Length: 413
Image 1 (cartoon, rainbow, N blue to C red):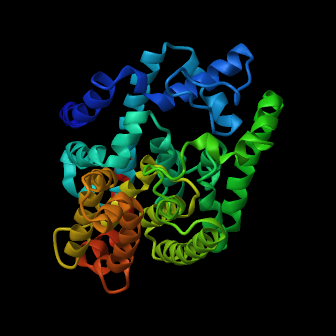
Image 2: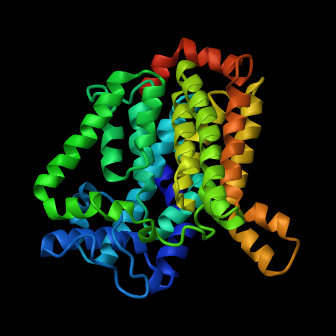
């Protein structure tokens, strides 16, 4: 079945890959891969990592911790065009692996056809606009989501059973700061060992990099980290965090800051409560999706492609048996979330406003991703609450034979 699955996956990825790698303007081609690669070049040539910019017209700085720059060195060893294509293939494989881990209760039900089923489930995921935008820019989100999901999912993937829980979250945190929200989740759940492991792993990677690159480390932790202008225009439509919405709609100044902090506290309280509830119910895929979406909502800046966390959310909603009984509730909810993020609603909103149509619908569309995230969180609560889809016959069957199913599921790529 694997050749057929590979062919289906390549066919599904073709529209996105052709659009963003073959027909896309060269001056906008894989701009984030270029940022990563230039960081690797800076290390190899001895130039300052955080002072260098990519070529015009982008002129983008490197904004990640120094540990990420070290990991980017292999990209500097190959031509930029080769790096862009290799990164894209790696992203498609990472998305496929994320689907395999997220659908670990559903895929075993397809028997010997599960490789083809995996490709079929991955196909629409590649077209979600956060995933497609990640491929467009050559972003790192696909790998961060995979690391955190592999670390938190239960049952633990076979290859990671000897790796302490928290290590992969710590590595993700050393690459980019936003996965630190998982450490907060650990602390809320009183999972002290996992929190300590994640913090210790991130600290070890950071300190080792400090020894290797002291000047770059001082530059990042002592200045670049505190400069939000390095991230681009925070008020632009691409910033789909709560703060981005308020920067576009107001109020400004101190009132806006107070409102933002109030909303962050409210959303964080509800989000961490839901994530803890998912953890206690054994819904680890939902747990990862909730914490990931929470990071997008409360971060000062969350670009469209940061919403890659909707991938585990979709499969958490689907569950193990979405085609019968109360599991259909999860099927409808997963379909709604998928349809929402398949549409490029923020850009529809911009087009709506530019045409001079009524502004309220246009503004709602322009800020659709945080609204979609809140909708997804509400649907997860609705589907997974006691007495709903989690208790249908398919789920009970899974709980009785879960170990056998998990053994097959963890052999996915």
